[in-house]
Length: 391
Image (cartoon, rainbow, N blue to C red):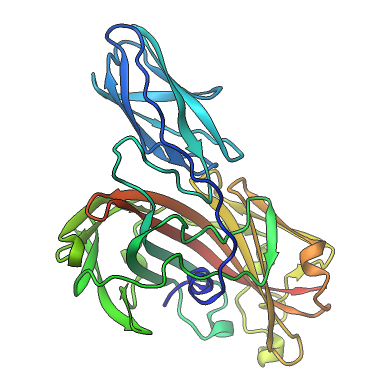
């Protein structure tokens, strides 16, 4: 079962263009013995938190790295490689990367781009460009399984591959700090490629098989029903395609990286689980849909936060009398512990409207696939589904 977010990606009409692509860094030399050959990846989410490897030489003594004005700790792998964790930028921008060691310092102008919506060009190798596929890995905990006729958690994995395009699978999402009503989008490619009978997502000894299916004449890959143990927290999965179709066999190391579960939500009434009274329940205290969301604006807090990615609150609106679906509100913000849905997004709905509240940590990354000379976009959604009503 695909997540609601991916269903929106697949079923709705396209948004406008995603803007200019960013360029890869021009690598510079420093003092004799200290040099930088590559910053990989040279882009990442505005919230930071992703691992960046810097290769070169002269990484001796005390080594530090700056992304613009933000200094981060560096781990020396050897004299020719260091790793750092990208800081939280709070906005989309391009910054210089400065490496300092006992030998001096070297600057990579425009060495890193913070972006949540647009994948940068990679001109350093000269052969990786555009998005050539997506892998979506989703984990959704459901507070009131009776309300939605579903078991919990819902875990799914989906993939599709295509020729490289300049548009990402997630460029339709609203910018952090904004909302959109009834979001819509189509995939960036109209024709998916057949790369064999199945592909695998592998983490250590665990391997998930995604089997080829045909939907509307298009080849897609789906893992079917998965369990909670299939979704390993804070884990990198390799993508393996033994056939690969016209691309030939390929393996992408760390193609998908999961994150941390959402462990608490405020107001906690969002997670009340007893069958609501209007569905025949007899609950008196902890009843689903009892949480009140103000039509004048409401804020949801959660923990933990500060994890790689952004946070999305998606509200499915249903008529309080008939139960019919009447609309969707989608808000997105940085992973800072709270998200606000403003009056401008809620006031059009009547008091008593029932709300399915999807709260997702949303992690988007791009990993180069040399076989296709394009990126595979990974979309990891880690969510909790609660209930509320408008007042």
